[in-house]
Length: 632
Figure (spheres, rainbow, N blue to C red):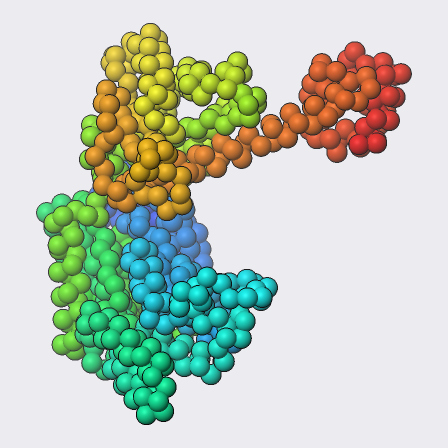
């Protein structure tokens, strides 16, 4: 790309976007001074990082968006990165909301909920985050075994007239029916808060004192309950590791370099106790991109519903002088400090209180940064956080990464109004603009025939081809589709591509089997089976693995989409039957009405003259139809 004319670039804060020859956004950046920042990309090539040089080599046009402040530019940049996911930006692909515990202590009888979003200013307390939803739910169950809080929703509790089953098995005190007073329940809620805050010693002292008092009052039944709670909490406390003796909430980050990229580890510390940890990996990055990595990660990791701590500890403060090699974000010298200040201000708005982003201030925080680096190093060695496309390539034994996935499912009612819905995922995210639905006629109720007919039409549709075609079904459905695809490809498309084999992998996903050999359709099933052509047994993929869970989620999205597109056709078919019961309306006339009116409401709203103008319907017959429609 040629160096732009300096006078054409504003000197205000804002966001700049580089586009390639196809007009696709390949990089998004923000600047406190757009002109100074953009011109820094057009230095001699040996002063640029390899990634920056490659980006400038592919860029053909530049676009700028002005903002009032650098903070606004920061927020706009993060939004555009999440939306467009540019190739040369550092993109946080695992940006899901982690699991939190919510305890609404302002309620009369609070319950402990597992949530993924923080509701700002709702008066409730949040504990977490937990990176593993399964581990969080196990903790949630353990807490309820120790402290029998209510589990039902506010609406269910309000409408309940007698205790539920949990009360009868000793796992709920039944506040719904007045079995426990508010003070006793509040005491238990306080104990749960102490446990989740990490104030284990204070909780143990409280339980021990209450147990001794109950024993002195000869209330041995209550003393036994408190004794069991005391023992259970002691076992839980043994698994907690206190890292800050004075307590404190913070997220601590550490960055390590690997021959194949950069890894970043995060440790979540709450009340001085390590709550959880997580690791992220970006292949192809070098140490020169580490400053940008830290700033970009913070801006993308925390969102409107995240649990933002009062402190974020980073391994070092980005910066190194304005004249040094430019990272793709402006993080040099004073620009780096300015970017951190803008980030801290944005996080403070999310949290509703001050947030400080700084390097380690003492030995304890240095030790936590080393711990985060150690976790990142171990995860990078195992490549547990390699891109999803690479993990799918490994488990499916594919020849290349699985970037684009097309998944299809059949939906019909007794062989009528058959639809085949297809959803498309790219880089782990749905591409809704590529979703398609095919109307299949003549298949009856045969799913195999419907899928075979769809396969022929998919070949006619042409590129872009997926890396993986996923069929909702087992060996039979997969074989029907694969046979048609192979025959059609070798017959017409192989010569064009100089290759007789399909350019993509086909697979089928089938429900797991229960102990009786039937399809296991229970909620929470994590053991579905993946079949590929030429293999009788399913692939050996670990139950509950991220790759299998992702494929299940794609299949579920396809199922919902297919049924959603089938319902209007089913309703139309039902209304067509109702129409044919009217005087003067047969199958041909019903079809004619549906071709000209989109709904029964439109038919009823039409004037008699509108119906009379339809081909083959005279004025007299139109009058009968119009009168009958008005009576519906």
